[in-house]
Length: 484
Length: 89
Picture (tube, rainbow over the protein chains, first blue to last red):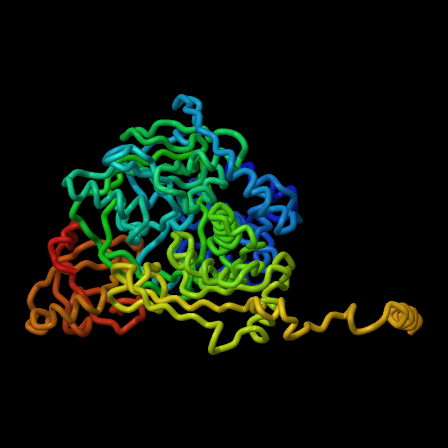
């Protein structure tokens, strides 16, 4: 599957609208997408065929994975080849099954790759040949927001694929947000910079949309995201060598941008409206010098509106990250954990873990693991609820709020830790130091589970419909209800 | 040159206030509001078009992109955007 065949699938399902009227890349297309998020709840995707100044040259692809809030995984499931009405548990379990079977990619010849239909090289390079959208009025520039950044670790040769935003600076330069602890543009780039040598990179738009999921995972160091993309698709990704460096890129990518990040150079990046719902201010960030752009005919450029309800990046994270955390907890031995979800409209700061409570201190062990593990580092608030709380339904948030309101003892069940943890600098609660380093976050954890001693000593008893009435009374009432 | 004008972070104006008030040339990073290309320009900045004939609007924004006001800039030279690297941001 590539972006084009995925768009065809959406069309067949009645979930794609093509817009042939002229729209501008400057906020107008974005405004339409924001309305789609709000009015249609992200039900449809849309392709803008006539972007002002770019008709026949490139297209914008909005709401490509955003889905209704109550089924945030809907289009994600379709990307995984599942039915659009697949349940949360079906999607989660299939994702987990495929996670355990990564596949190495295949290398194809340049002549067999669609991404090299057109090539801009050297002085001919022009990033403004593509309609990168202006997404928020206050943004520092035009942005690529749903793309894959590829860079090699100069020490080990491990190649990292990650999703990072990129701001277009000029015809042949970009800058991007580099968050401490992330591998590609931060840790690896710093290794090149320490040696005073350029860092070759490729920046990929499109290819198989499942790459966006693989590149968004928190894999352990040394694990290749491209192998997991193959595992998720259940067939190897097809790669082709870049034109100007030794990196490999998806052969069916829409656009591939190649170049180097030069050491010791910085340009202003941002401001940009972020997924947190707040604007992240301008910061000096590394500079990407573009040496070559290869692309398909009339490429599709996807985008997401950070901070909007309910955006594409939220949909990817809502689908991907809770499953990944669930998997990591299972691997770590927390078998009593039943499910993990993000609350709708929230991401890491609305992380809910449903778990049984098999022995005293279990929740505390779980809490300590979450505080320290990479997958738990992005949020500042976690909630633990009982394992029998239904997290699969569309209204699971109501169940979580009910647990929170009725089972949390403010003295005993709310934990605050001030241990200077890492958290994303994008988190609006970070102070000035934290915004630069990512260090300095506290954590707040809500234990909404039934206290261990309650269940053992029958201190309290929940009201259940089945306990309120005898079967005879229930049958009589049902019959009467039908008559009335 | 942009016909619509440019955009600049307020911090740059604050930093160069003395030079701007004296009518001196300054080198500043700006955004072309036609193309949204980031460039560095050499020019003079003044409070109004009348005070600076031949100038175009220069929108002033905060670090978070909020509009702070408008001044005007008469661009003498558009330079490579990396020239701003030499100027402490």
